[in-house]
Image (cartoon, rainbow, N blue to C red; front, side):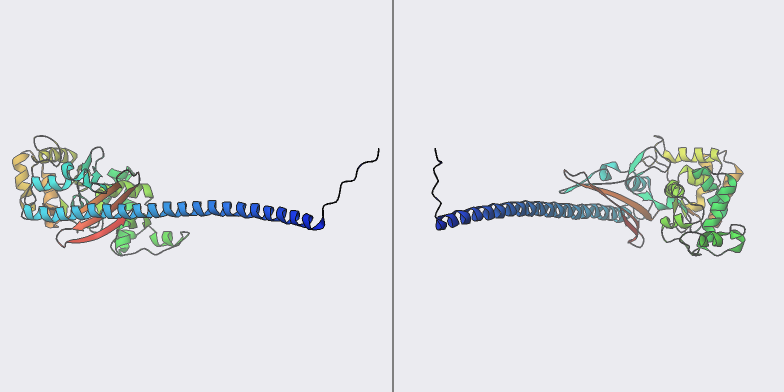
Length: 350
């Protein structure tokens, strides 16, 4: 039986079928491309919206933290007026240990905390740090620096002496101090060499440029050093380490801190004993410590002669940390405010 031949499709109908198939394929490709473009566009818009949201949050966080700093500055200015320029136990507490005011400053967008770790470790304080409770590395003798470095860094006497002389050599040109240190050769031999400054420190971070000061040393020293006190130390707020660096005996320092803390034996509370005048400090102390030894009286006398003792403070470090509501990111701003000049003398954001 012979197979039956199928009739051929007419030519015009065949062309129409092929055209429809081509149109279908093109339509499918176009739809695919539009789908890919739509997905890309959606992801791009989403990423831009996320970026915009993050930038907006960071701007709000910046303003929030700045607001906390400004509130602290206003508080310091007002507190000086309230206490009539007199450093009282109330002023000391309000500025340096005031959790009710500074542990959580609530604002509509979030909260700001103003606080700092205690110089001797342990307790965290809410308030501002008294810069005049520290040793001013721009205006202090080698012996005091040497004692401070040995106490804080735990290095041997010879290394403490080298570090102390390197600091003085950085801030001034003194051949007697720099003899044997070979600091010029050291700085010139570095991968990125530089010259010693031979001028006062402008910021504490500069200490990391000085020969021998590794980052760990700089961090350990931060609670005890400043460049803003013009060499004066407020004996109403100075830490035990600071007093020991000034060459007072450990027994005297322990007794003095105990007297200063008052009956509750807690630093910076309303019952603290505040000594009002550096010129009468030795006389006042003899009423509290009848057995005070001649060595400590001699140190007080020498510090008075050199005008290194203060009973008040006008320079404070403000460390503000802000956080927006329902956000994890935090912003930190550190500044140093001089009340007498009503001026921020240092400002840094982290």
